[in-house]
Image 1 (cartoon, each protein chain N blue to C red):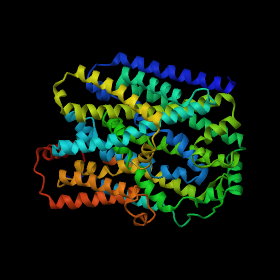
Image 2: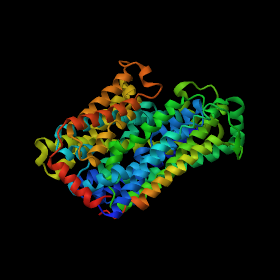
Image 3: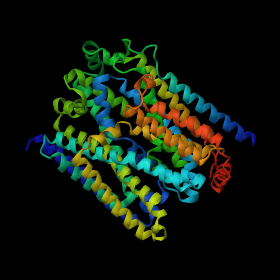
Image 4: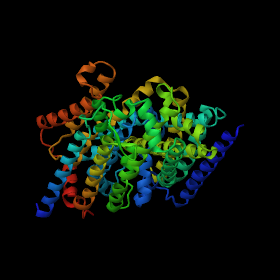
Length: 493
Length: 74
């Protein structure tokens, strides 16, 4: 076993021990109720809430996809995210989060489907929304595991195989989720967020120094690959449409939405909103810049090979201990997303399906036991999918962000538009998803997109259908609409 | 509707309008595909500063929303 493998395994063992320890400690505070297991009793203060929300949003994409993308297309990868998502998503914490938080306090809601379905007292709409969100979230779980397994395999030079790596990571997540539920996950996320933020800054500083400083590293890019600085490798239509999609989708991620409802009071949400843009910008800027510099240092990587540019740079240019830091940072980013997705899918199944079935009268203790079994089953499912690694699932992930973004219009309508009807919300979802899938599967000609990503026309179709169906259906007279707007009139601007 | 509430609603509309404008003008197509000199510290170009500026204004919208729009709810 080489020194590098020993260094990586030691630091990862330490990292795993710490997160499992936090999980075990958090279980002391468990109250054994559904509210506690799934929502941490809604008493998170700012730092925990920020870490839980930010950790749920930062995934392997940031530490592998962004530098890998910048390797091929250049610095444009940081504004690809930072000049839209980094500020527009926190803005939606107010738009969606403020009213949803109030509903969560009033009715005990935990999921997107409960908030939207509750507006019109429509179980059908709630079930459709929940199914769509689960459909787009489960494949992500699998990629998180795959990403972690591949990183471990690469950092240990194959000593830990892909499948063994996935099992190790899944086991660690299982321990703190089963023991601590949402509280365990949020506390671990606080540690993980610290690790990947520190890791990202350290990686940038060390790589920049090794390449002769930022100016020298960028000068080399200018000489050898000027297209990486001119942005000619990415069409502006793609830049625009992805900006819209990546800004609108995270607020509908079930894991992020749920965590917004766990804030102790509106002040914690506001403070989270104020903190969020800074590390969001920083992470993207640092990772994309290092990825671009990597092109001159390690040329010749093709396609997805460039996703490994960070470990490759560290192996070549930095001391061995940095490998451990990178490993810990990568795992922190991947596991924080994975645990939040796992818990959110469990919550959706428990609340949106089981609570409406014969189990609706089951005690809290029984439902928490069932939730724990669900966490276990979903982890096993993600592992099996990871072992099989089916191509179809990978395809779903390619446009899952657009799928989430298409769900935002009905969510906003439920919270803000009194005239909107449940039929309009339902048909908006159906129409936008059909449009998205038709473009992705080639049933609609690509020329109809005018160079934009298929998510953009799908969002537009969803909004048009929402408005059109609203005005051809009768004004809603249901109790849910009256309840919601009576609450909003009293509590929100 | 009270004057205070009307003020906040107007501010809210203004923030969303500015957000939409920002999302559109972040596509600086007038520089797109052009090689620009690295004017700051030898590694930062004008389009990079422009994109940073978009983020700064977006961040300011977030702070403005928290301070002047999202208030007094219980």
